[in-house]
Length: 467
Image (cartoon, rainbow, N blue to C red):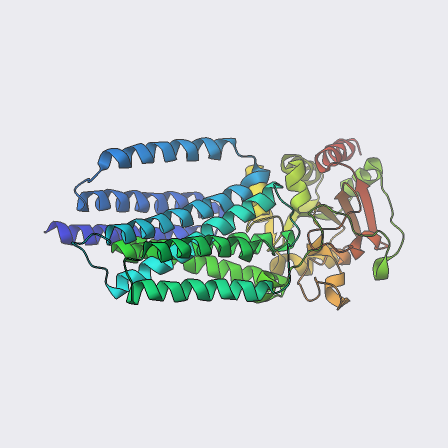
């Protein structure tokens, strides 16, 4: 068997491992093994690629791999679970940036007098540079928003959409000029790189914190498309396959999340939802939601929970900030010990990245079979004694059903208000990411337990035990 045939078979095995690994990521019980399978596929692809190139510049490759592995390993161990969305965002950016660098380096290589750039290669280089550049700079903006280094509110200006359209058309026009008319024009190519980076910033900066989970998913898709473009640039089949899988799965997840908010992708990208910084307060008691807020003590709330028949926990970003997931699991264990039926309701866009709440609860060793997606648990709220909302806001706001003036209107929400009792754990009456007041806080069945979520849940554990 020739090495060419063996290499192609190895790439086929790697692609199969990617696909089966991705499939196993659908379930928490198989996600870990799926991750290992995909990693094994990538390791095989890298080894075969190095063999194909006869280990050219292997010293530099080894140094880069060691440095990257150290940075990745240390970062993964050190990062707090609350900062996981930022890490995902910055990893997306690095992936896009790496793909852009591959395209740029290939362009530079083809400037040699002994080589020529075909139209196919030129188009792949321009697309790789464009998508990779947009992904890199856009992800850096998303990281800055999530990390609080810049305002999480939408930053808009007049003719913003027109400017973005003009930037995109300019990159495509200049790219066509470089590919078909003046392949050696470095100045124009540098302008393309700069415009791609600017486009990434101007595309993400007008998107508010309410839509950051969708942005993270979309940028992940961009990074896959950039990798696929890089695969065409260097004629690497497995890179094309891997990038296409990431791109397609990212787009599918983006669509699922848009459906979960009952909004189009165009509205997410251009709607500028959220008029205030994350955590900024809306007016309390204003508008249609005006009413009486009912406080509850930890003692009373603990008693209600201890004698409930069923409890549904609804986690949100506030739980992540307070790192309350372990205390929540402890409270659930206490309640289950008293015969209470416990489950968790997960909204598709709860938190700040896809699956954020699932990851946090899995870290706290919450049984997978107690986690339910919105569609699977929404009908259970009307038969539930107590719904405990921990830091969630927009995803439980009843205004989404009837207030046509609300940016949340039409978004599917968790039917928390149908429960017999509602206990909401929050620091204050501040609005959520969308910047609108939550009608649930004024609902006659709602009791507000104010304070840090972790401290509040810890008190509930003690009261439930003592009941």
